[in-house]
Image (tube, rainbow, N blue to C red; front, side, top):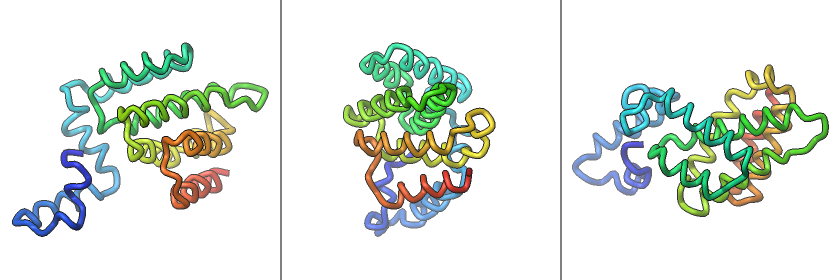
Length: 188
């Protein structure tokens, strides 16, 4: 996410740099482009990606333990990696699914809390709806692997997507709901 998405829109491609923009759109539209950018450039402040992931995991575990929205939001800001927030969404949802998937009763308290955190971050313009959507999409892609650790992953994913839509951190689109349902159907 070197350039803002609005800059790469069709309506802005009438300038001298059209070929450059067209090439950037092509490169950024490829599968796994974000992963490649992360390996090439890292998260943006010189830290290795693995270090950033560890920090994300720590802040998410702390949030799930304390449920302090303001503290979690402060920590997310301190990461200084807005283009990497999709990884925060993915890791947060997975952490909540792991905790809720271990419970005997069908209590989704951790999933609901994670959706509340994402809603708080979106409402305070810390994380974008696009990053939430992208994080959920990436999580859907690894759903079959997740089922090895969390057998209830498809049902938990569906519940989490519902919580996110209800709380307003995910655009309510038929396409997103269909993608999530399609991913849970494939994982069953």
